[in-house]
Length: 396
Length: 199
Image (cartoon, rainbow over all chains, first blue to last red; front, side, top):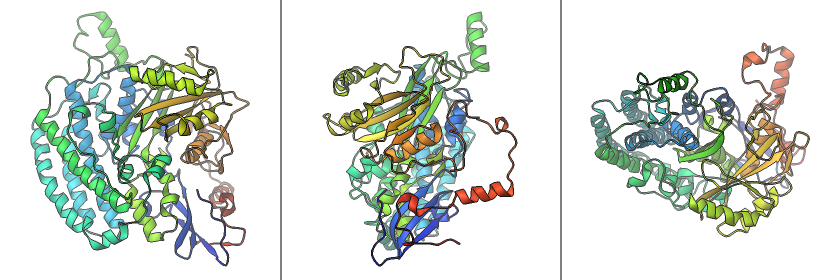
């Protein structure tokens, strides 16, 4: 935090924004030091959304913690399960079969679109456009229809399982997804016209809240915000997890790292996600969705009525949950908002000894004073909207 | 994970002979360091090694006091864990520092990695570990009035372990007061220069 002392002949004004304010997208307080309407300094005051998610992991079994992860980045749905299970499966040495991998990737990319649609509409609304949010939420509702058909749930479907997913895709899944993949591009084109090419939108976002690649790296910025600075770094491409190595997609980048570029990167990411989903529909492998491994949940059942050892292991696996050998692993993915990592430590028990959740929003919010210094309050709201954070992802 | 091992050996040379490697399930090169060496090691990895680790990916801690499988690791009551990431190497490195109960303090690395600011505050808030040289080592997630450090193993995890909650008028006033913002704490303006505006 740049500590600006008082200036000669100036009275600074101190202003609270939040904790209850529509522009903060959640329970967030920002304390501003103002010189007139110019922001001299800003201090984000976080923690209002803190629910002790890391502490709760120490009381839940490895399996029953999955629904808690849904609620970290609550717009990211199964993407949270993905990060947690990437870490867990490294820890337990489980390899998900090809169909399970592709089903996971397909649903995660659908959630990336769902997240970006919420961001798109609310960002436009932050800047005074009242209509786009109704359209993007309508599209999101269509996507939720697919999530509901496939997963049963909507925002927090709790659908991934250790070693795979809760159930195989339902009959007719491909038609639902194909319809959506064919439907959305026209809508995105329309939003380009109403939002991205709107002159007021551009005036409010171009050159506002920019940062360099060096600053972004110093402050731990990841995901679309980092790429908006012109640095082509996507963990799906650079450290391909699951089946991302087999999929073809572009990594969009910006140039100046301002609010407009952050928006442009996300808009293009939605198109790339559609491209990934289309490849998943066309190339979905057959075979099982879930791994054959004693630590999966629910554990393999096929041979339980044939030998007593398998029956005992199944019984323990269902009643206790998996017992994981002592060790630790970090699993990180390219989540909707940036790099989301789980650092899991096992002490050889049925629950985690320590679960650390590294979220992108935490690092991004810490950068706020750097991004908004010297600008005006309306610029601050543009920056907040362009960063795409949720408070649950900051406070956990 | 052969490349990780090669990278690990090469990095151990930079970290000095007292760095103890540990093998982990994720293959990330992991080293135990003494608390007196962590600052210098982090600085080297950030500024001196070829293909430096330019991002502090994460900084957190573990309360080791309830652990039953020590497996020959350095015994400390707490462990502070640093995850650094190098874009040039496309690789993480993990540094761990064991701490004992009466010396729960480490030098701050905020001047090396500015992003460490909030992470160190969070470790202080959750574990009660202090960082020398941190500019604003206040609680970050819990209210200032909170007693204890929630991620310690002896801190209650559920409301039923904490006794009934009562909010007396006096406590309400105290909690309200604890939310008051004090500009001078943050080095904002000389006294009297900032007008406090509150509704």
